[in-house]
Image 1 (cartoon, rainbow, N blue to C red):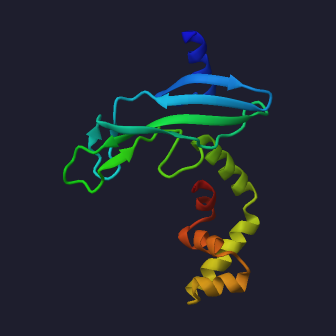
Image 2 (spheres, one colour):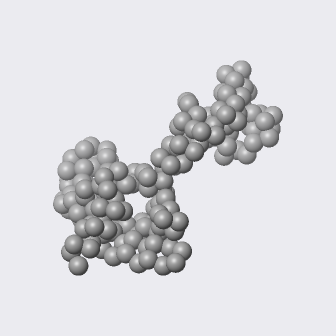
Image 3 (spheres, helix red, strand yellow):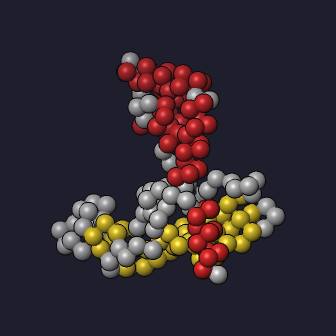
Length: 173
């Protein structure tokens, strides 16, 4: 059983060392993977103090890239730690698994990089739209004015104004 779990981990997460595959359920259309982090603690993102005091844990379901034509549903148990620094503004924080998750992310890094590659390959029109938004903003137009002039949603205009390059559109959340 141990050998099978190690092989599954190597196949599903080849470049991630600190993860343990608890179970895998393969269906005709879906592969369900239950995993958790194996590190003892984590560093606070605000003050970078290492903590091993677990506050709680919960399940995350980051979207992942398909595998062998099947959808992959990743059920990832993550821990919330207490920050040991009394001067830190954060009381608790959630561990991030390097190469798999990031703060506030809803996608795995593997899916994020796949989407970035597709986005960069097809970014001609998106790049033109981004340039138009930045040109209007530099000319002194408000976001609302840019939204009306270009016929975009408020969220699209906000995303375009928050990035500096087209690549950032596809590598963000």
